[in-house]
Amino acid sequence: MNILVIGTGYVGTTTALVFAEIGWNVTGLDVDPQKIEHLRQGKLHFYEPGLEGLLKKHLGTKRIRFTTDKKEAIENNAIIFICVGTPSLPDGRADLRYVKQAAEDIGRHMNGDKLIINKSTVPVGTQELVTGWTRDARTVPYPFEVASNPEFLREGKALMDALQPDRIIIGTNSDNVAKRIGKLYESMQCPIIVTTPRTAEFTKYAANAFLATKISFINELARLSDRLGVNVKEVAYGIGLDNRIGPSFLQAGIGYGGSCFPKDVAALLNMAEHNDVELKLLKKVVHVNQRQHLYMLQKVREQIGNLAGKRIALLGLAFKPDTDDIREAPAIRMIQKLRNEKAYVQVYDPIAALPPELMDERVKFGSSPEETMKGADAAIICTEWPMFLKIDWVQVKDSMNAPNLFDGRNLLDAGQMKDIGFYYQGIGYS
Image (cartoon, rainbow, N blue to C red; front, side):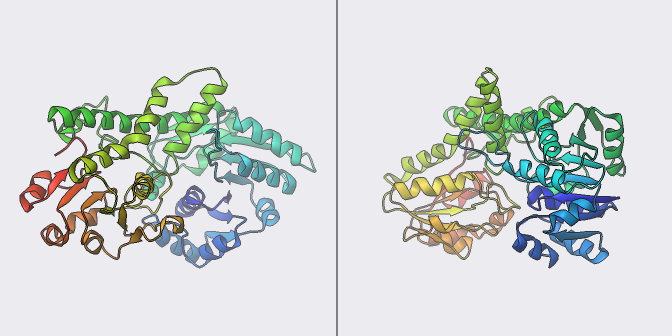
């Protein structure tokens, strides 16, 4: 079976490689020639464990190819996945310009029956829009169908999630389309849910909104835990053993980030507003998350005073480990706040890069965690990279101007750090 994937970003590349891995012939299409050339050379333009090896493997098997030729790609493939970006507009709406362009391209170059499957995260009703955009762009009235098949990938674990999914959701009103899409996934051992396109589109937003809610919930409890002298890690473990709750996304910290949760919650709130429904709980989820990094900075001020002129080391830029994604990362918000307060900032991350616009005489990127913390008045862990567990903290303590350690991800053992001689503070854990 031949499959076309339009868009070779994070979702598109992962989707294309997984379909190649399970035996289908895949073409990846993108308008960015540099991105396509890198992929042809076996190089990913983002960091995701395991994917680059899979890319090289299937370039070798010739089950995957990449192109910028829209006409040829669309003409040669009857099954087409739309995997383009849907970034947030200033009012929170999902920007569908790339989805619309993909739909119009398909219609314009259609040469026979096509099955169009939208995997991008899109507002409810987009399947209907794609149908209209494709239909209006056709020069010949070839038949086509449009379905929804949302992705549920975690950055850092995308390959595992794609090869061993919890569920596959197919949004279509056609039994024939459901069977055709189900055939693509027949080797996967998981529930396949067939529902309407609107329900499929809504399910994606509901899933991310619920996970964001769990994070803000435990972060609010962490603040109260600090006041009560309670260990929020033990609280999370205790409630997470309840199978009605589960342990995932109950790790207190400095807030969520990335390309999905902030964008998708904003889009869901926007959909609710346009339908005269107020989602009060989700508004609070966003409010808690946007202020969580400030809670950690307040802990720093209470210990070392005014931050002007102080040297602050930040360990981690990415919003989570095993990714280079810094979109909406709490560390970026923290750097901006520290700059405004005239602190000097040293930053280290093993994968993610510091944006050029944040680098100046007050913000530098360190060559190692140890070098980054040398001479610092305080160090803040912003990303729970496993490598930070292996740091020689005894040596680091002696190299700092003052041994103040603030663990924004509750990564380290509080007792051990205090025994070494650090002033240690976590989030709801000290």
